Amino acid sequence: MENTIAITDLQIGYQQKPVVKNINLIVRPGEILGLLGPSGSGKTTLIRAIMGMIKPMSGTVRVFGQAMPNRHLLEKIGYMGQTDALYDTLTARENLQFFASLRKMPHQQTVAEIERVARVVSLQSFLDRRVADFSGGMKRRLSLAITLLGTSELLILDEPTVGIDPELRIQIWQELKQLAAAGKTILMTTHVMEDAEQATQLLMIRNGEAIAAGTPLDLKQRYAVDNVEEVFLKAGRIQDAHLSSL
Ligand SMILES: Nc1ncnc2c1ncn2[C@@H]1O[C@H](COP(=O)(O)OP(=O)(O)OP(=O)(O)O)[C@@H](O)[C@H]1O
Image 1 (cartoon, rainbow, N blue to C red):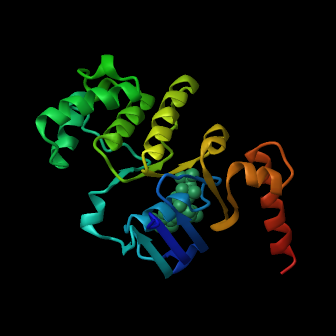
Image 2: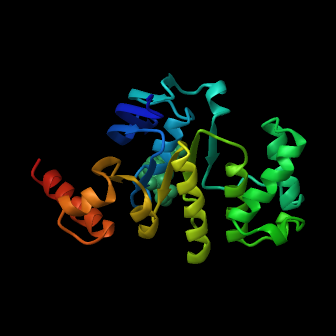
């Protein structure tokens, strides 16, 4: 089966200063990749390179076997950035209708999809409220609902669970796992360890470099620890020891 994302020896920077280095990554259909790392470690930069929004300094990024940016491929990708791109003066339903129309979704399907995605993020009773009156967490949920509209083959979610309470997070994870079971690919960045534990694959980055990669179970066994947070801390200490020995 074709890889959804294939990254080789990737280096990305701003003004020729590298902030992400030596990344190699394969993500396959049906996988949920959790991209884990502290603030400023390069997660969003990596995602933006995958989307074709930044040109790498070196190395390659292929999505569905093709180089990005590619307008036709963008139709197969649902992208949720860190900032909510919502129309405040419109209601939640109008926002969803607008984004469904951009995807040329037929009316009948739009009606059904709005019901479905609103249920996933528990916004059914707020669909006819103006987004201007939404809390930050509700806006995040609406952004996620918009990203889930339709049948994207690849979902790229930058911190989708920020401001989302634990009960709703469980509901969202159920949906993500169902999508993955149906062969979709999901890539998400997160700071939340509970999210990381549920991903099928993890890539931990620190100071722009991959410090550990594998399934949560493999990583816990390899580093002989109980949770992915400890994997991260231990892998970070190994990175520090390596850097200081150079
Ligand atoms: N447009 C830009 N121009 C210059 N430097 C940038 C730009 N965007 C990000 N950076 C720098 O690149 C590094 C990685 O940033 P990035 O946003 O990818 O981190 P992140 O892991 O996504 O952080 P967070 O979890 O806080 O979102 C940081 O040092 C940041 O200051």
